[in-house]
Amino acid sequence: MEKRPTILLIGCAALAGEVAALSRLNGWDHVDTDWLPATLHNRPEEIPAAVEERLREARDRYDQVFVAYADCGTGGRLDAVLDRYGVARLPGAHCYAFFAGLDVFSALQEEELGTFYLTDFLVRNFDRLVIRGLGLDRHPELRSAYFGNYKRVLYLAQQNSEDLLARARACAEKLDLQFESRATGLGAFAHALGIEEDTAVPDPESTWSA
Image 1 (cartoon, rainbow, N blue to C red):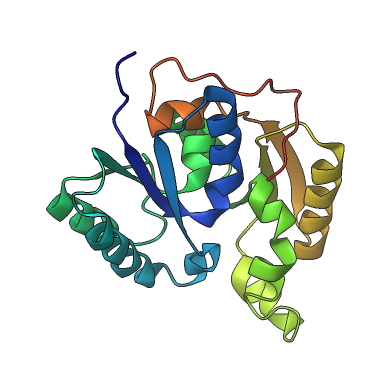
Image 2 (tube, rainbow, N blue to C red):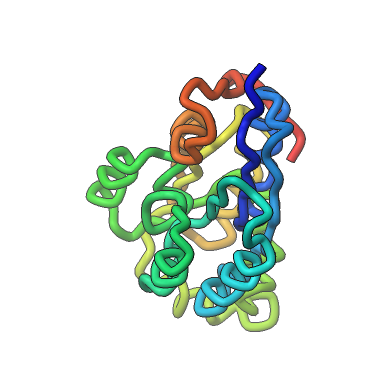
């Protein structure tokens, strides 16, 4: 059997569970991961430098390096770093885009611009990253400043879980926003990673540990 090229994924820890599920299902023993803290999303200006540090450390150690971030609020600064290293990243402005697929996400944005998106990871970590991360536990009056222009919470579900669905609904209630959910599965995400053309994805009705 021909040896597969070694690949390093440098990315956001918010994607670790989904990548682990794909890796187990597809036997990706040639893929290593290097996760940066998901809390960087609250400080997106720090993402480009953090990624560049990991790129320097990985230099010449892998056949291919791929960055598992979208732009994620860096305003093109992440792309400027990646251009210098000749490294590609996930498409789109946010992880919501590549989970849903770019065309679907664009339609969702046109449908309601004032949408706050949730993924499985963000549902599990909502209190830590959103409530405490934005200081809403100490200053609940800031809710209107952060979310006053939002109309709905849209949960893009990577797996079928009644528990996560209930928790996502509770997140919307905490923000006093309308709640909707859409099942995305991992198909669009697996395609965006581009590790293998025939990547198998978990059944949409299945669950996996994050």
